Amino acid sequence: MPGGDGLLNHDLDPQDRGPQDACGVFGVWAPREEVAKLAYFGLYALQHRGQESAGIAVVKGSQTMVFKDMGLVSQVFNESTLESLGGAHLAIGHCRYSTTGASVWQNAQPTFRSTATGGLSLGHNGNLTNTLELQSWLAERDTDDSLVPGSLLHEATTDTALITALMATFPGSSTEEAAMQVLPRLRGAFCLVFMDDHTLYAARDPQGIRPLVLGRLESGWVVASETAALDIVGASFVREVAPGELISIDENGLRTRSFATPDPKGCLFEYVYLARPDTLINGSRLHSVRVEVGRTLAGEHPAEADLVIPVPESGTPAAIGYAEASGIPYGQGLVKNSYVGRTFIQPSQTIRQLGIRLKLNPLRDVIAGKRLVVVDDSIVRGNTQRALVRMLREAGAAEVHVRISSPPVKWPCFYGIDFASRAELIATGLTDEEICRSIGADSLGYVSLDGLVAATNRGKDQLCRACFDGVYPVELPLAERLGKSILEDGARQEGRTDVDGLETAVAGVGAADALSRP
Image (cartoon, rainbow, N blue to C red):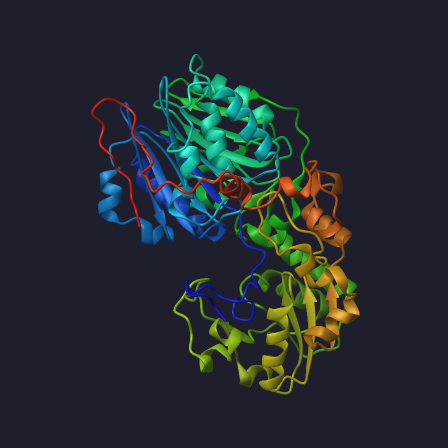
């Protein structure tokens, strides 16, 4: 049953409460453009990466303004809000799904801190694995008690807030030099966009686990989580930000520095599900990769069937590939309601019993009497597939053969995807045959890890495959030093509570506040 906040439970959540998306970041330096609106549309293109909160920070002269709130990009911003952020030449934006810290206003991004040279705003996609180590380093550097309770760090319980606060502890250094001190100390996955009063910065962890790309406008530059965000603002794709690279962009142009030795380990699950199908990663359009995975899946797990149908939308490209390779006709057997999100009015008992129909409904005339191949991107707990198979049989399907365009998910992610715990992952304790019986399918087939990797056109050693094979490319600390609420747990142990205060997000004498509170 959903809680009082209306959050979907496992039976009603069409994504099975995992995998949940990473975050989306966007930055633009363009003196002759409406950068706040460019940031808005860039975030709109990245909305799939995070739906909990959204924010934009802009620089106008020596003034930094941050506007952020809980909700979707289109809910947080309107024409009036964007007009109030107009006149700027520099902006960063963020849409969030929480992987460290609770989903509350204080943890919305971009974060902000005043510095000796003005202001610093920062947005982060990924998840750090040495958060407590960084917290200790911050405590050592906080010699004037500027970061004690009542400060940004006390109000926000995210690794992003830690990064921002650490960069503010180098008063004699420029932002770039402070970044070069902090970035080599970070461990885990991090794609950062940040800015001071004059310069846009972008940085990517040495493994390049999460995507980050650079684009060119006629009168400026753009950095974004995915190339789809470049497309929507009319920027041409230049290249990916390299692992271990720090980029700085200002009136003198673009310059680049390396803060760590590259060791590429791009997230394999970005290819499966996270990134948009129209996005490019490592030169490959993800729609084409997913179609190829479907072809591989058909070769590895053929089926005698009458129709191939996807679980929309994430299963569609692989279903197309499966149909092409198998010669079985492709069809639409399920209709998706795109307007039901993860949070909605708590349903009545009658509606609750309908479960997955809140999001998916079968086309009975299409599937009745048919032997179906049903293609989806992943199985996490198995609740969605179990309900789906039951629904298809009730609609008249003669057989239901489930095909999955990723290997079994057996391990949690600590680099920015909020999977279920290992104990909750259905593939951890059951064989494929047992899972097949559990979900009620006639047969079940997962694409092999080698088959998935081959479709990406990247070497296996250049991909993070941890959720599939348990090989983590960045060393993990002890379990008690990991977790989404690690900083909040520490605050509770110290007897602290959240401070209900506004983040001071303005730098410069006489600057006006431009913050949003729910």
